[in-house]
Image (cartoon, rainbow, N blue to C red; front, side, top):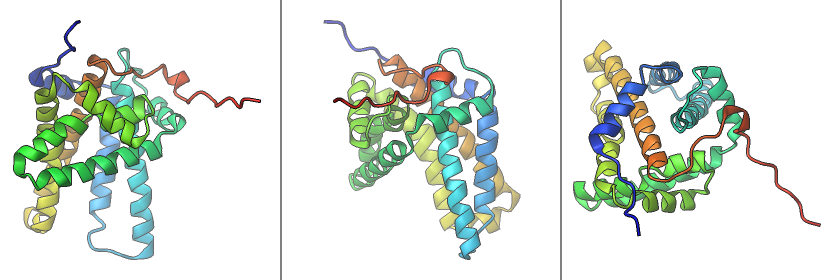
Length: 234
């Protein structure tokens, strides 16, 4: 019986950051940064118009992350940003991605009760759940299970990448917002948002590449991203 394939933390992080300066990733990240800064500019505005625009920007951000995942899951990447955004819409995996994200967040909250090591262990298990929901179009719970299955043998690497490139930037911006950094840091706050977005995007790329390397599916050609129609038996 052959041992399961393995990936390393250093190579995944290096691959993630190497990709973000290349097309189409840099274009997708630029859009994501623009959405993040625009959303942050709303501040405490709770008007109906602001809430509606925030919701639109949230869905746009989700589709950008889906496009980023799809692009990262293919060996020969088409450089067109528009192509991958259209592919994200055609993939029709929104509820799967959101459901997997919600389950992953709940698992992380449980892990937080077990102190830092709990967060690391949970991250090692669920780090590739969103990838499974997008590339293999798995249902939320199945995506969590798939992530845990594939990470066996490389959980230290997956947990480390998830902690460094996903958890740390997210925690920094959330804590900063709660501590009033947007007003105290001034332009430095927007610089922090940009750095956090770049790191998170590098994390998406790294975890997607790990998913493929560990035996998960890869992204089909952009022209074939729409799921196959269901056949009705008679």
